[in-house]
Structure formats: C-alpha cells, structure tokens
Amino acid sequence: MSITTERVQAPLSDADVSSEVLSSLINMAGRQRMLSQRIVLKAILAFQQFDGALAIARDTLNTFADSHTALTRGRDGLPGLFSPALRDAFHGSGQVAAKIAEFIALASTALEAIGRASPRADDALKALVDSVDPLLTHLHGVTAVYEQESRRIARLQKKEQQQLIERIKAIAKEAHIVSFNGQIVASRAHVTGREFAVVAGVMTTITKELEAVVSAFVKKTSAG
Image (tube, rainbow, N blue to C red; front, side):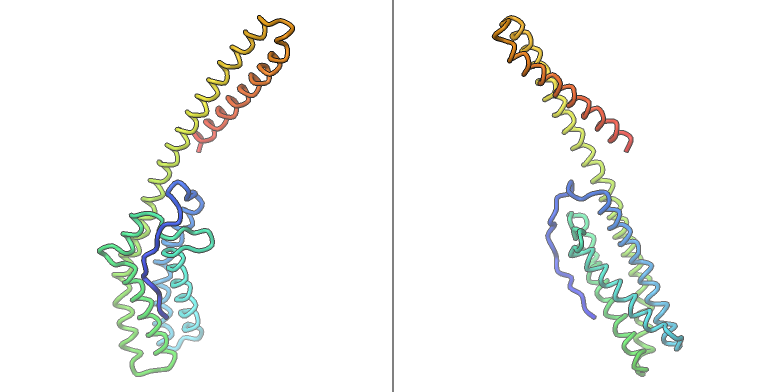
C-alpha cells in the first residue's frame, strides 16, 4: 500500500471552515493515534496466529491510510490542509506526512509477510513495532495543531461576526435617520406627502425589524 505526500493547496479560507468541520478534523486526527496502535497490536497477534487478527489489522490499516488521505487532500466536505500551519505540520521540517507514509508501507509489508508466513515476517514486524512510538509523537503534534487552528479560527470568525454586526447597526441607524427625516418632510407636505409618509412608515418598520434581528444575533453569538 502506498500513499502520496504531495502538497495540496487550501480550497477554503479560514473563515469558511465551520466549527463542525473543525471538530471532525480534530476527531479524525486524534483517532489516527488509536488506529496506529491497533494496527501494531493486531499485527503482533496475527504473527502469533490469533484467529481474525490479520483481517482486522488490514482493515484498520486501510482506515488509517484513508483517513490520512482525507486529512491531507480533503474529501466529503473536509478541506484538506487549509492553512499554512497545517501544511507545515505535515510537510514542514518534521516531514510528518512522509513518516506516516513510511509507517503505512512498513505495516503493509509486515502484514503481507505475516499472511504468507514469510521467513522475513519477524524482521518486518520488528520494524513496524519500532516505528510506532515515534509516529505517535508526530500524530499527537498534528492533533495539537488542529486544536490550535480551531481556536484561532473561532477567534477570527467571532471578530468577523462582530464587524458584520457593527456594519448592520450602522446601516440601521442611517435608515432610521432617513425614515425620521422623511416623516418630517411628509408632515409638512400635507396631502401631497401622504404617499411619502406611507413609505417612510414602512421604512421605520423595516428599521425596527432590522434592529431586532441584530439584537437577537448578538445575544445568540454571545451565548455561543
């Protein structure tokens, strides 16, 4: 089994990544640690000829490799490596993506050797076992980066929401002033200003509704 370590560009901006997507990414990244340990454990049991262990090890390896692809390249709504911090975590000086690919290759080789009862199975299994502890450290670091990015994006989105709220408030204030001035002009125009007064009244209603929406949105975001 092989896996690419090609760099990919972010298809989304930070602000476009929802909290639900970030939670999925964090969970998937954290699960990789458990899967890597499960692969090694089941490989050891398969070497000792425990029934079903080899099949479970292969299935777990497929899940691990598939999840790595989803994290790095994106799939089913997941954005891939959408930020510089994540791209550096996988493809920076630590070369984590390459080490994950190496682990996948070692696991594939070991499981194949065990399945064929090859004389090289013992050495292949030892190489796999020796690789897992350093890998766990790297996977833990990657998960930490996802968590940091989640907190950073939450702050960014909150700031953008606040800016939007302030802009809507400013528009509502301007509309309220225009409506008020319109009502004054209409009252001075007497009969000829009745239609204008109706328009000004509607504008006042819209302004109040807009202010209510802003107020409700502020309460909701503050509670969140």
